[in-house]
Image: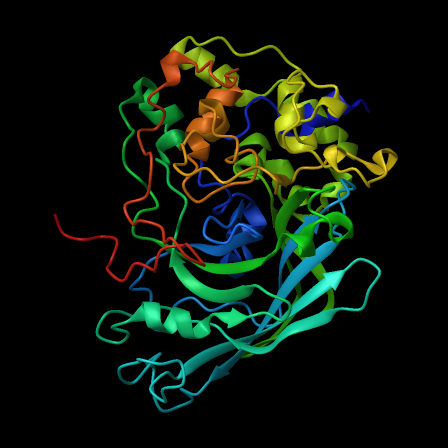
Length: 460
């Protein structure tokens, strides 16, 4: 299979006009939300530029009033953030969180907390989760970075948890060798209008402008680490580009009356790199299989090749709005999503931006096309980030990593219809008219906003 063909296969020219990135994108994972990856972010920390912050989220569409059990992490599952520094599609480094629960409610109460919770150690907090964080390097024994970390609880409301920011701060752990991590609930940082599924915004762009995810929370893992820990051979100057994706592994559940016991080998059940790929590019019959694959296998999927060489979404846009679909196969998307953008890929952009082929110490013969979110750690931090990032000349944003403020829906909509930096498609300039969240992001780690604590269905 040629590189161009494989690239078009995985990403196609319809990649992600709009959708909730990876919220309920595949049939099997939609029924198992605790381990459903939603979004991945990777960016140089704006206030600590020798480090990179990685954020991965799970368990979408959390309504803040969803008690009494609220939104725990799945006990025993592997929540992973993976780093590919050589371009092989295999993780050179994995950060793995594994949770366990201490539930003190027993037969005494249905309450998550039976009084005000001001501190993680307060006895009024009856449901607690703890985690082990391991650093797993290829060819090395796992190293435990955090032995018994405390996860910030679900926010049960203002009367119960009047200062959730304090609880999140108490849950933030400093890492040996530099960096920090936190497991917390957060306001969903993704923003978009999801009415794309009503035949692309109502057939006449009348159904736009409402952030469908406003008011909902997610479970969020954030880790900030020195760039030298992520770069190949520990040298971010010679090897600045990394590929990032999150994944979840779980065991089979053995069911008995009133009990579910994990058993057997761990199996990958969810995966996410670039936003929007699994949800919009892949047809329903391939989504579950994609969630089970490692990126190293992406270029060997003929069923995906056959499907996306003639992608659905640009044709739909053409049929409804008369905007001609770009010709296929899409070699521009080959670089954007599957190889990274670099002169060495031989793609149409012919600039060096974010491919592992730019790393000086890798073996290029081992490089394979793989669907990963790629970040060039040497790109300077932008003082005033542009929501359209690379398309408007801000080269620190998506698809060069992904910041919380990047409007990936409008970026993808433009790129899928053939836009290039400085050359936008005027007919699509308004996008979905959702340009940011209604809750501002933080300026310090972990940057994600505190969770919503009011019901989504507020009276008018």
